Image: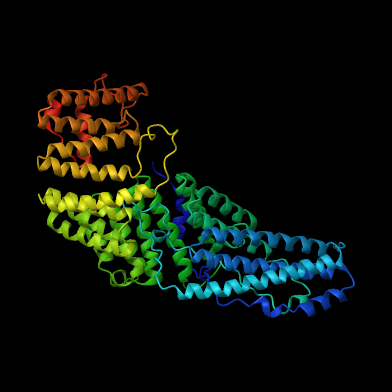
Length: 603
């Protein structure tokens, strides 16, 4: 499946010089002016007492709640930076309520409506000012906490996902950087002295808060809610009013669509984002600004990511190279973001089968000085080293692959500790290479380490609901990762001709696979054939024949189901009604890296 982006938007970006624009909004614009210094209870009470009509009360209340909303939004952004998305969302929700209260007072002031009693107005105003004072105090404490963080936070570095990676699809560390937007507290003077608060910024501030709420939901993997909030943000303020903010929101909305599997919607959002970047370029003159170039590059890179996921490596490569050109222009050749873009291009080149070119691109990132010295980039370095190891295998450099995967294990453990699922994959891959070299003892050591990690991870998982088909027999501490490690261990025992231990491992894998996938699944058929193979080696001919027969029965039933739908597994129509036979099983096993015994076909 191939997704099309509006080419006119891309071509307009490529042709002619880019025009400048202010940098993208970013948090940390400096300490905000505290409302606490304006909180003079006596002065506020005096002002309330001196008002001859209710419009002045409403005007002051409007300003107080607007300032409270700003403080709540900015405090929420700090909770977001510290990774507490739940608390950030609570502050954002309170911010929305405060802004609605401000709009209510503003409406009363403009229509000269009589407010509630003077005493209740004073109480609500003082309550808003007191809450603002408390929120500002928390904001100051949070800023100090952000500055005092000892552990370096993983940096956001846009890197395309490697096929089979255990990192989550929407893991922020591997996406273009996106931070919640703070709102400057630009109104001056004590609250009770503000005569005309104005309403011009209300809609933008509302849009910013909705944008931030969507980002918090996106980072906490609530992609459906994130999509809704991004749509609300765009509808509140409109794309044409602030095209830069709207383009950033659309980029994030596209990521949420990808998380939902809605690639068409993601491509539409990115096409619109690119159009808005083009508008920003056309609205100013002069030399290109870094913020504009980087914004366009992020959008192009996300487009390339979607095309790679959709299977169009050629279009993905074209888009990634456009992003590279802009990032080089904005940041220089040696910047780490440029190196990460080269890595992404290397992944696409590997997908196209251009192995030697892919190696050069990936090596550039792996040997980059910043990547190797800055601990924030260890997760990215581990992914790149794993990819380099795969490229070594593509080039049949098995001995070199052992060195590379060994380094990958070290870097991954340094980045994530000794209990990350990606580390288990690194250990399994290293074990397979050692296995192929005949170093069975070393391979077994890595397989057992991977099994220990997978078992610990499975024990921490939520138990599967009993009503889900095929999963009611899954035991605590079992998972697909556990089955993979056990299968690898079984292969070592089989190579050492310890058939009884191999059989026990494979039978555990069979039980787990039935629990995960159901009794009639291709992988279940594959494991039955493997077990039949082992039984033949042990001289248990009758048991082997039963296993092969059960595997054949499952394969034929699956083929019949495919024929009933008019299609076989590969997506092609069956010719002449010919059955594929048991050859399906060894093909699947070879794809898993499992040897298929020739006796199985004979049986």
